[in-house]
Length: 338
Image (cartoon, rainbow, N blue to C red; front, side, top):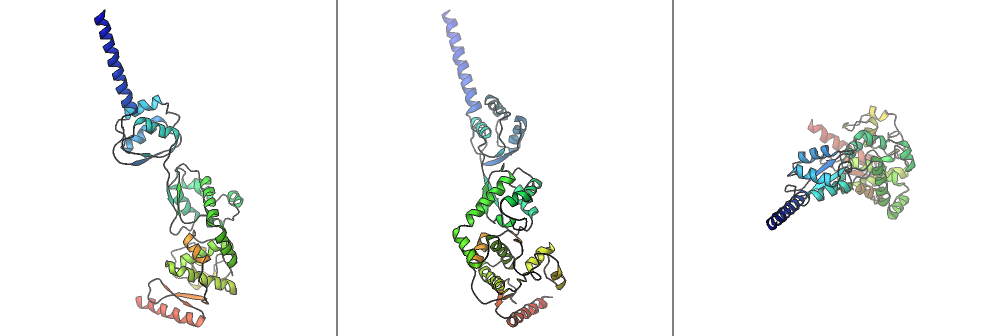
């Protein structure tokens, strides 16, 4: 009997040890490889699909141990979609809790470069969220939403300032638009509103002018000067005659030379035919260029022309005669290249 009790006791202790080691192995033993990476878990993902995602990531050492932990914590049916960070030495308990609680890792959505169309904007946004570009585009063209935010379809692009935004992969397109509007409202603080008022422009008009200025030159130092040229034209009632608006009206940014036939296009964006600013930005505005417009350089220039040095910089003129001399010098430089 004594031996029996001892053997049973030993068996129980060994069983407890085995259970403890197994429990620790399933729940608390590191089960990820070295390094840091991210996985994307779509909505309505089941445990089998999740296992495939984890295996394809190459970050899980033992998928069977993870599956046991998933069953213990009732993960199946409770997997939250999102972008999740996988770090070195994560145990199954931490990983399961991360997926069950939806502890996502945000990432950056950067709007940069020439974004002239809602299709291009939708493509950029959809590359950073779960929704596809078609779903995003539907929201960007939702007239009722645009109207509720106080914009028209033409002025709506002014909401999307070129910048970097921290977002979640599961963000819904409509929620993102609301987020952009909040960022827009923050940007247009009291100081900037007062500056715009002093110029006699609304924030949308400032953004519209900024989009034209940005298209005219890649040299940041020239932006306040070019803005001053256009503001002088607005004040005197002179048409803006901005070539970038013609390219926008033609829907062909590849056009290198604006010809007389191009100037006949019937469009509210034709600033040769129509006085004043077009109805909205021709490209998404940059905060830096907007500030260049708000802090435009005060001068008497009404014209500007690319320099004959062909380095992308411009010469500015107060009179048409001076401008014509600059233009002839530029055309001569172009002719020498042919």
